Image (cartoon, rainbow, N blue to C red; front, side, top):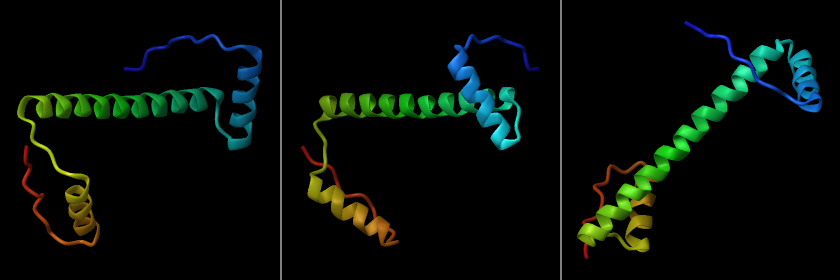
Length: 92
């Protein structure tokens, strides 16, 4: 169930939203909802990436296992070429 909420916009931003809505033949409400949805999705992905990086860093600190830049590049090149490739073994 969608709940109503309010947002305060300064006159300039409100005008910009309205202008965009008119040019897109959409409502200002649709433009704002779409903008918020895209922002939240992007920020959720950014936060997930950050958390993955922090987990990887902690794992590296715990184990010392890693790949060299050359090993990672070679493996990614194989994947990009469509080769079914196992990742190289990590080393300390």
